[in-house]
Length: 198
Length: 250
View 1 (cartoon, one colour):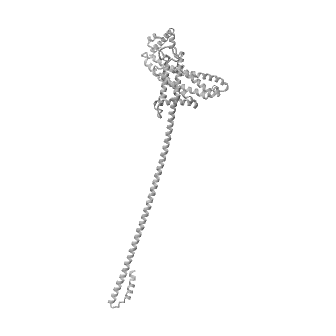
View 2: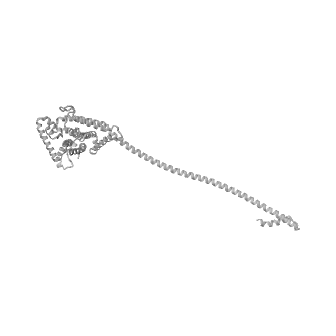
View 3: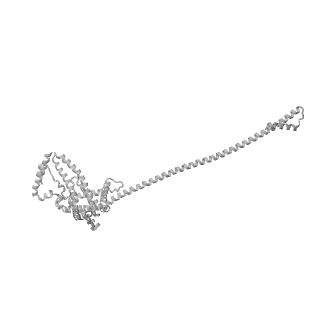
């Protein structure tokens, strides 16, 4: 490999020697291709002219069309992003408000339900009280009636017993040969029954 | 020339031939108006830039496609560079600096195409670009700051005794700017392309060919890097010079 490189380097040296030899013959040609083309001042005017043309065209296109357009796109995007962020913040706020409203509605519904339950309970209680009172009154009335009838029965029983006792006493007295004085019999029966009936 | 040597070894070395400016149609003298390979490749570069920045952004999409992304990326890069280095006032010259950057980066990359002509490898081209920057920046410096622009050369932070010496050095370095600015770019382009050509020349020897081809591939990859870096460096230096013009005090 190294020997090959040396050979190549040698051939380069040969090449330059030959170039030097030929340089005398074709001086003009050699100046064009052997010297640094960058230093060939005959092409400067051409390069500078086309450079100026290119730069003017590019400057015009960039400053009039391309750069304003890109600037607009970038600021549009920033506007859109900040707008979206603002909208997101707004939606978040709305969601928070909706949540609060929901909570409030839930609490309202609950208290309303409690109120309705309490009202119903009170109403039922009232009806119940009325029904109880009515039933109590009826019971009292019936009891009083029963009481009255019992006392009537009792009274009639007492007078019946007195009648029977008078009759029996009058019969007994007469059958024993006594004179059954009605007033005396009554008095005797009454005095006897006083203790028995009460 | 050197046809005998070429025939003897099979090797041909014309690493500089790729830089020759020649007429597009026929042969003959190159006049200032002659359409040459310079014209062709500058047109290619200009059309490519217009295709990217104008056609690519035609959709004006909120969600960009590839071309629009690249266009916006390059816009953002140069815009941020100017803002970071020269400040907000520098943004007035954004279209000019963007034109410079796009032209140089596209020329460098177009030059890497096979058979292509690299317009930025010519000091005539880079020299004009650098001189235009130098002259416009100097003009901006004097228009914006008047005589205060000369503060750039009068280093107030240094002791008074050595200020004149520093002023001389500053003036020299100021006037060397366009030279280094232009030769840095053209030199990088010339060197890279010439080295690739020399390596390619060795491929004619079968035994060396694999090494030569690997070297060409390696150099080519390196040149892709250099193509972007040199455009970036040219642009960033333009921004630095602009900063000096806008804020001349040290």
